[in-house]
Length: 271
Image (cartoon, rainbow, N blue to C red):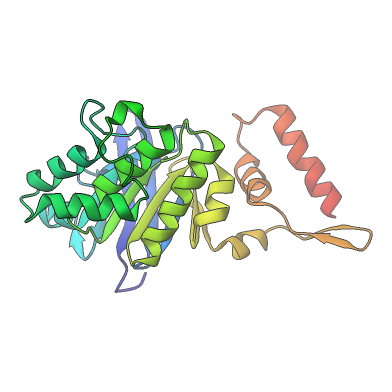
């Protein structure tokens, strides 16, 4: 753990009745980086985000965002973060600009109109700013949603599966937006089920499985967990998907026999 981490999580635990969702989660996120939290449905990704954004209390362990403890300093945490959920939280009756102005006024910021115009330009939505959001494409809605999250210049932004349900072009638009956020110094914690998304965006990748972080490192470090594949004179590096299946599939009874067989075949080909 580094003392200057934008996000620090230590031994985080959470149960719902008799189901242990988080069983001792540890990780930290460097300022201005993109951290991808991967995991299957039900792995606990959204639970981690809800705890870090003060929407849910942990049972044990500790977590801090921007140096503020989520349990004892929740208001300070809320002032330094923004959360974008799995579905765009925009008002379809209002125009894009009106949505931005509304949020700026709710945050009691000066000159909400100027803030809205600046964000519309930053997210390439100026021409569509006067149109009702109901006419926007999926990618435009998600860009507007992220733009609304940035009002107030939060240090940390949580993106919980931001490209769920989007078409390929819209996904690329969101990817570019996330890259721009990090380039401006915003720390991004991204949860996703799309392994190629993590490959494209993340500086650091952690895999959450059965309530614990089982792997945490850069893409290059994760690829080194498997031997390089060789076909005649061509060396093929393992993809993140192969790494994920090889790690999570081992000993997981929920993985189908076909998937496990495919993983075993892949490992044999590498030997």
